Image (cartoon, rainbow over all chains, first blue to last red; front, side):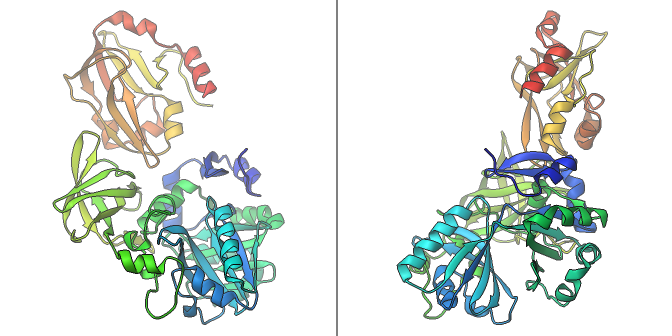
Length: 359
Length: 128
């Protein structure tokens, strides 16, 4: 039995093609994945991301708890509303999940975890809490829906459809959030475009979804979400990293705060193992499509594509890949696709931002 | 509901084919197949003159989402390919029965009789 978000009927009413996504019945597209992709890059699109789970962590020991729980350092969160992207690691330094932590007050943080890992993550947090005997509560917020509205015109469309959120959300800088009554509006996303991620009471989600559609926001499925995040060079949990992959081998060293005395789960393993691979982008020089698990052949040894697709904004195929140390940006490598070896150029793993091609 | 023209023959693996006056067969992928794959972005066609046994993969269609093999619906030799489909893969989404992929000269013309008719294909596709 697939799990459904509160917007399931709304997706079906909009003729979505539904797929099983990690146990959730979710829209993959509403007709054309490529048109939805372009809507986000050029105008504005919205995604139902209610399958992801907000988790409220509340109590006087929240800061010491999060400081030990995740690889990035919550001490960086000084201004209320600020968001921090981090990995939560196991003792071996593998990634239990990647998540966003919003700082609200010193005793109240909100964490958003991935859909497929939510149960595991919450159990992991509860177990660490029991080990460390700290004073706080961990509360999954399945009573909330989440809608991501993304694109150059996303904020204006949100204010048109939800005028009551404007006063709180207009001053927000990127990677900040504000509470607005029962609504939580964050200037974050997973597309490489400006926009908001809005958490709201589940009972109001369908009305808001339809109001956004009436304001001209294109409904977009998980297909477009994947090509948008790939072009933006953003990792996907379960594909680009998992419990057996170090963040240092998945291009996430920038999210790991190893400096100083602060200890966190997995730190010892990261310090001991260091980085064994580098995580870079590939742009296919021939016709074809790069896909996850294709082998990358370099003079320094083999690598592997972890995410690949056709990039609608670039009109060519791109990928994220784990490559041997020593491969340089600008090198040409070979990718094994069926019975051929095609040329691909190694690039920084960020292909498109704010509508502009970077490669 | 996808479109299944009555005048064509079909395979379980979602190819359509049309028997031409000169005895060759024109082959493409069905409307059901293009719809399931989503936006096509790459089409790889076989070499003219190559021979394939029935059921062998001879072309590839890739959407943003996935790659799918196209199989030889019967044993035969490739006589022609449609470069327009490779140049504009989206044409297969727009009209899967106009955007043919290749033509085969069957080893045995009677093999066509073993393929599905429209009703049988529709039933098979509905069953998926």
